[in-house]
Length: 344
Image (cartoon, rainbow, N blue to C red; front, side, top):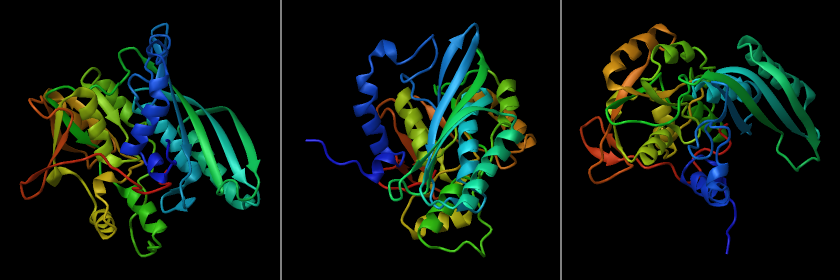
């Protein structure tokens, strides 16, 4: 007998992967998991694509339920616009258009709604992304908690510019900066921890600045992902599982702020499970890793760091091995359970 859907099923970890696979992916015939020679459910990437006359039309869809609605560094409106743009960028595509659907609870403060929509518009205007359609609905009081924003992002990539998550043996794993800032902020606020005297803010920012870097290393970047729900741990486990390789990461090289590690430790959460909303994880051919790092640091990502590598798996395929700062090793499991509900 089927059980009940829990918050863990939407947390971006193992339970999310399991329920999506069981209820959706398995029911789609193999020949219908992609269309027009594009990318689809067969890869479960940040988005999908249709291949039209030598161009990939990249499409990404997401829903945003973050609580609290306002947080240091942004609000749900800025998050919805930025998160959708970043999902398109992670596939190597230039974002060109967006649609949104806003569902609001009866009695929601109109000034707050105005602020949320202004923030959304500021992001897409600055990034020159057109808003080409949408929907607006109001639900009776108590039937939705405040506001939910769903978005569809559309981008364009040439055939040789599309990035799909296909890591290879010898790839180096690079992160573009400090991880887990957004997750730590939301986690602290949800637990009633005041951040008034803290400098910690969400790392929320569009990653369109990476597109020029991706173009310069065309063909050498084999995977890219923004580590949102489930954090770095989920990204690396996805890549290891898909490739059948082992990914080894060095904990001493992973950029984490002391406050992020502190909040996570205080609440018993691995900081590598925490979401980032303005960073990328990149798998790049090892022969050009140093050049990529130099380019990233010159392109607005000064804290970029190489944190690990992809190795051939002799016995234990599809795992992530974490090397601690004192030299010990452990398997970095994918996140499980209610990590941080309503983080994005």
